[in-house]
Image (cartoon, rainbow, N blue to C red; front, side, top):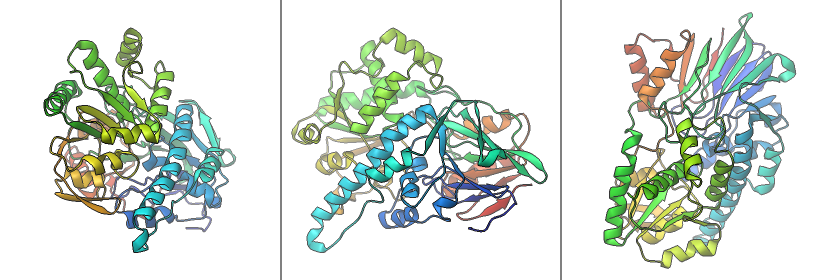
Length: 473
């Protein structure tokens, strides 16, 4: 992959046949542009190997375009910086602020989890090392350059340009539209990143771009439809009512960016309407606390849906800072293990692959009055997926635990477009793309969405495999 080429091509080095680790390389006019550099999540050894492997020297990159701050799209950037990245990392202003929180937190969590794992496995001689540390994260963040939505950034000497369009997925999330020479003409390549829903609890619906020649589209939920968001309060209310009756804990493994804020907003609305029972709520994730403060700062911004902005003005405190217990210290977190229910604990990570939620699961997973509430996508190989699939025994920090807790999944809170949203997006383009590349989906989801498109007469689709390259004409 190191040779210089004047051909224009796109290569796929992550989220190709899987959901995490988004990494796509565009080469045009002899320049190399990386679209996202996410962290792979799943089986520990497999994920570690994938995260350490990169198809070319980071110093050979001319630019990085970051769609949004979720770790499966941004979490590999500190490793690139550690290995010699010199190029700028372009993103929206909100994504830059969010990434400064999330990448530092990722570095701290890796260090803390490795330390704890090595401690409890000391007698066995087992050790793991973090992929990067806070210094590496800081080095990556020094390369960030913020761009306004819709503003054009000229890359690699001006022969390639890019602009960020609202993706409606999370605060600051963007589709990346690139104009590059190909086949003697200029072609528009649109990378959706993660695409939001047409109806969302928080976010403005995705923008509809025009004149797309090549589309790189996520298909996380290409094979299913989401539950209506309007049903979320009633379902969550039933879970809370049962926890209060059983004096149990509701543990919600939640992505710190967007998912946690959606749940908090629903709880706030239930409290205001009188639908919520009296139950303490703890947000036990320093990163989630910092991100929620940032959401509060941006609550009048372009990214948010008008209905949310109207509610925020009326309520004054949509994220419950006056009554929700936002925890930062380790001591506050540990105290929850000794406390009796009922209570709600919202903690990262969303796929149960690291962070404080592992300690809450370790201490409560064997109790029948515990509810583990899954509210987001669980990638294959993650602890969250094993719980969601009904495992009777799971390993946490390498130690086996019996699962007596009740595990429930709610799809109301997904910030990803479902099959209907994805299809509507493609149909809403001003003209059919020359080719559509389906990424960021497991094999079944991608294949199902390709069949959906075929039934609509759209046959120019490709499901790229890891490492595959395609020339753009």
